[in-house]
Image 1: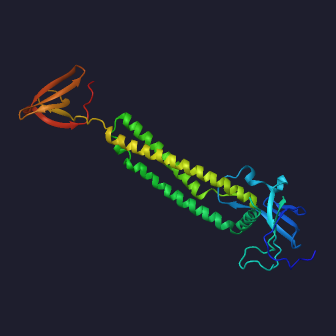
Image 2 (image 1 turned 180 degrees about the horizontal axis):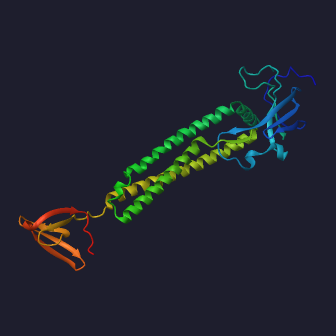
Image 3 (image 1 turned 90 degrees about the horizontal axis):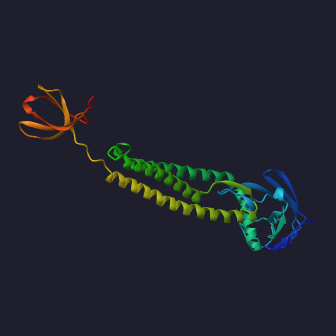
Length: 103
Length: 204
C-alpha cells in the first residue's frame, strides 16, 4: 500500500482499530505491526517492559499485554515520513493519528 | 480520559524507554543520600549521652528512658524511610503503554500520599518519645547516697557506717550490722585511718 504523503499532520483519534498483529519477542518486548489507518504506511513499533519511578505495581496497573490478549494500548503513527504541518522539534515522526489496539 | 490525553501518555511511555539507565542511577543516588542522612538519627542516642547519664536514674526511670529511646529510634527511622519512599518512590517495572503508565502514576500518587501521612504521624510520636525520655533523665534521679566512712582505730575493730556528724574531738557514725542499727562515737585521738567508701562491707 503506497504511503499517503499528502495527509497533513493532524492529531486525529481513530478509535479502536483491529488488523494489527502482535508478537511477543521476549518477556520484555512485544512487536506490533500493522498499517496506519490514516496514511497507510506499514509501521512496526515495540512495546517494552521498563522501569518507572517507584512503588510496587500490582493488579490492573500492570496489565500484561502478552498474557491477557485484551489489554488496551494507545499507539500513534510512527511512519517516519514528514507530514506537512508537524511542529518543528516535535517528538512525533508520523502523520499525527492515534488509535487504540488490544494487545 | 480523552483521546488526545491518551496519546500524550503513550508518547511519555515511549520516551521512558530512552532513559532507563539514567533513571535507575538517579533513584540510587537519591536513596543513597537519604540513607546517609538517616545516620544522623544516631544523634538521638547521644542526646542521652550514652550509658553514663542513665547511671543516676532509678531502676524504673532507667527502664522507661531506655524503652522510650529505643521506640523513638525505631519510629524516627521508620518515619524517615516512609518520607523517602514518598519522595523518591521505589523503582519497579511495567509494560510501557500509555494506559499502564497513567494508571500506575495515579496509584503511585495515592501511595506517596499515604506514605507521607504515615511519616508525619510516626515522626511526631517519635519526637514525643524522645522528649519524654529526656524528661525522665532530668527528673527521675536516685537520691544521692550518703557517703560511708570506714574508720580504723587503735582501740576497736574497724568501724564502717554513715557519718552523722563530727566536731573537733569526735565523730558520730551510724552503723548497721547483724546486731541492728546503732550510733558509735569515736574520739578523733583514737582514729588511725579514715576512708570514704561507697558502701560498707556487709557483716559476716
